[in-house]
Amino acid sequence: MALHAARRLSSSLSSSSSSATATSAAPKLSSIFRNPKRRPTNLSPRFLGQEPRSPRPGSGDEPPSRRPRPRQPWEEEAGALLRRLHEGRYLPGPDFSSAPHAVSPDVVKAAAERFGHDNQVVAKWLSGSDLKKLALFGCPTVERRTVFASKRLRAFFNIQEDKICSSCKLRSSCKFANQEVLRHNKVILSDTMRIISLLVLDACPKELQVTAELKASICKVLKDTINLSS
Image (cartoon, rainbow, N blue to C red; front, side):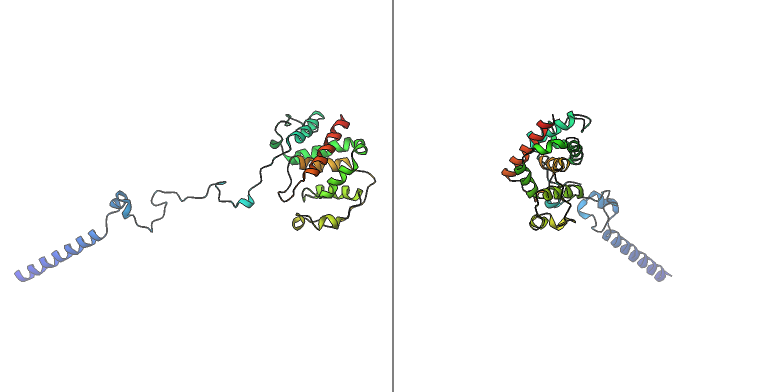
């Protein structure tokens, strides 16, 4: 009986030793959080009380080539156009002539088109050479209505579409390349104003470059149009 009791005591001591070894090998969860260096790497961030990080919008993760280019309107000309459209009630609301960068180009080009339609008589007094330079520039955007406004201006001066489209930097994204339009026997002022409004607001793709000579012609056409319509 004494031998049997001794064996039971030995077995109990061995079990206690194994339990103590296992306990020392697996630290308590509370000790893990007290000592950050001992945190297991396979725990999810939410379990550790952390939210997974996500990139913030506009934090620089967007490729520079895809970021919108800040507009730089031609201050004097854009201001004069907006002032004339506001005075003629083509642009309701506040007068943005002192802050042309704050107004939507789409709103302005629609207003400029209406203004041109109401003042068509002015077109016959505008400089033909300056208008032709504008026609040779091409289309300021690939938006359908503006493209066909540019085509009608080119058609008036008998400028072939393939001559302009073949060297156009927007050709790859244009659905109307080389497409001809019917020729009119007059310059359509609503078309001209739609084109000019986008140029003076600097609302054209960055691939297009306006030369100093073209800018001077555009400014003259716009100034004459405003003065003759007043």
